[in-house]
Image (cartoon, rainbow, N blue to C red; front, top):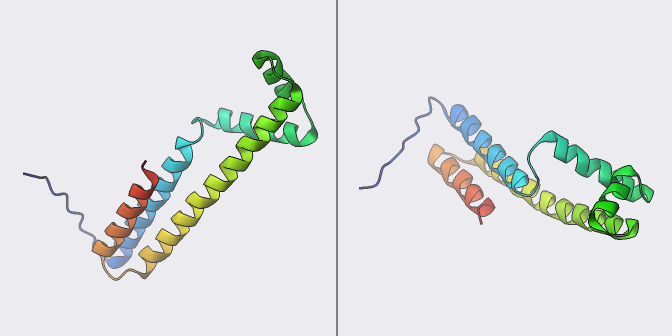
Length: 125
């Protein structure tokens, strides 16, 4: 027999807040899936991107030496990775905003649950 979890909300506004939080967390989880967690790593990616735009820097140079690549090869790989992330990040953000709009327009908590669940499924491979 399947277990059923029921969430009761005192008001429709409580349900909206609950499901908006679920949507935000699902989007954050999707973003984190494509980045190494931790602010230090995110900061490293940003510094490397800025160096790539400037044509090089200590991080780019260190990576080139560590991987036996040219500085230009590292710059190219950083710029390609950033472009791919921007496309994916935009898709995640658009889905998050669309789901939040739909939740705000929903008439019942059941509708909100369906919307949030569909978004979570969309972000799960």
